[in-house]
Image (cartoon, rainbow, N blue to C red; front, side, top):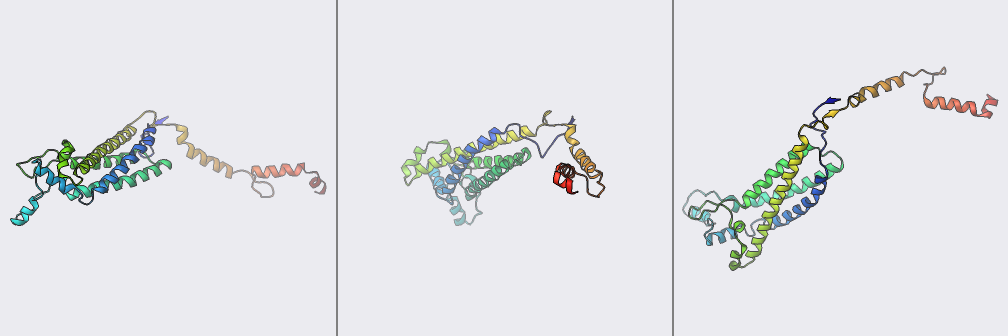
Length: 259
């Protein structure tokens, strides 16, 4: 028995959590596709920004107009209120869809190894962590109204009811999108832990039987031995099929009489 560490063709220690985990992963994926798609391109982002300023909870979207009017450089828009965050959320939801399809195909074909899962889940965990930070991100653009967390995350949506126009409903959808994003990040982090666990050295997984290592050389030796079989006097290669035909010829009475 030889001990070698396999990096690529390394088996998973636990497979059933990945199989059953695809069910909630698909549910979360459908949720983020719908919720992030409804926010594109700017359904309620700027409106929430303005509501928060009216409640003195964050900066005002008018800082851009002030910069243009006073011929000043454009200020840094907080990530939570930027178009970049909206596009980023839609992009990672679409990427997650293709990764899930690819993972299902790779699992069926038995080529989804821990090293692949380690890379994929590490990237997805980082992407969804950035999305969580963006959705609940800080807003310090206005020193008068610093906001460590977006108001629609840390406060009840009841404060948006007086504004009408579906503000309360949109606030609840934003909370739901944030919750699903956190669950998605936790699920991918769980997958990441499974991949890291599978990549750790293990005595049982790293033990390779010496007989298995010699299979290639043994098989080649058998082929050479088969090729070196003696030939019959007629020059025909001696094989088990040849021997069977010779035996059959001896057992046929008519052929024996006319021979």
